[in-house]
Image (cartoon, rainbow, N blue to C red; front, side, top):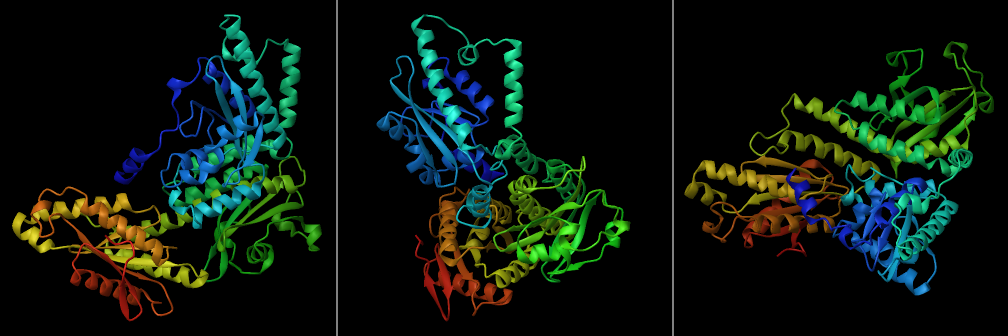
Length: 560
């Protein structure tokens, strides 16, 4: 909670509506809503924009982050100067794979302005590639629950059409102002039409929405539903919601979700819908066996029919149609399971268009499955009391279980993994001078600092006494060093009630780092190495971070 407040406080403002030309905000909103794309009115380098309508939540996350806004600067940040210099509509594709345009406009007396539009995916592969980066690539620190709240899809023809509507809207606003008329923005953009014309336009729009990526509206809605609704407190509810929404997306009467067990190298049915047999009656499927096992091993989805496979459908299965979709759920090299969909409502055959629909929401399904799996483990660990009652951090028991699991994953997929031990400097002095209640409060404040400095994927725990530990999955030693230094600075700069009376003039911590390697390939070795590095930091002046490297320890390059 405290970390979220800190992030909110650091967010870069996105909009300065008080500087926008009168009447333009509703005009922008009208075009954005009818076209289904994002539109921003800008007067120079942005953020902030003067007015924003239907912003892509991914773009908002990038441009509101001081750490990541630089990625957008050469693209949407410089869109105004690009459009004004060319004095024409310009198109570009940004670092995130989103297609955009910039239109120079002059509105009343506001001089040279530009409208940035689009911020839309025009291919599912671009979307999946970006989702991979959020999950396990260079953007994983930016991942949040709101990231996929409003994802936009469009095709290039629709972007062109929207750009022309923007230019026409600016011209009509200027003409209206010159005639000293004050019609509403909707009236300016959409002249009155006969009911027959309206019905014709509605039918045209409806037909357009059904073809190819023109189906972006249900796709975007599905992505929002996945992020908003399937993050349930109960894992089984999450699995059932995945099936319900995926089946609704492609009109499947029958569906099943099989989860992959890494240790057994097999698939187990976890949820089903419309299947006669109960889940308990369905046996496990080994990797590579059957349709689901083959799909998972190959990592390629299948849209086929029983006839295509050259095998008869068993009568007891009771399939209504012959075609089906079998889709492997994965992100990068990490396998989660297989989603099966069959019996299309109406008796039609599944095709590439249906596959594309599932492809777009597959990253969200993978993230939801991972969250559900950890929730399930957390529920199991809850019996053993996994939370430290004083700091509300995880306790040592949970840390050891999680470290063993992450280490196994790192060995299997060659992922990096780092670990840190943290000790409050001169804590005994603090306790002796100020009493145990003050000492407990210092531990609570230290835990709050850890939450504020760490990422969502990091696992902080109270190791014991004044010692804390942090597990850093998929993090190499260099990244861990940056995080360690952030923690050290955060605590050093935080006001503790009796901090100034400490030997170093403030409450500080020393940190020891270690990372998974051929020499440190067990949980015990990783913890022991971090502990040795911590001792080295203590004996060399405290308030610093050291990393264990082989037989010696080395200074963290970002310390102090």
